[in-house]
Length: 76
Image (cartoon, rainbow, N blue to C red):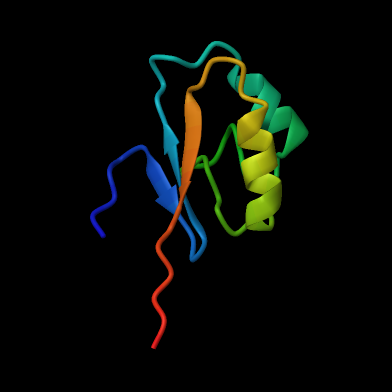
């Protein structure tokens, strides 16, 4: 899977960030600082919390700058 500069993935989900849409980046950093970090690059650490916590925080994004998709699961 090719990852774009503003996409971050773990085994479960891929998070996309559109900085042009962002109106309040402080909110995600304040509410889930283990994932959304303000002073570290890359600023989204997908290992900072369980995927369900990351998805819940993204759903609170007021501008839609953050979104996610569930990665396809491969079964043997």
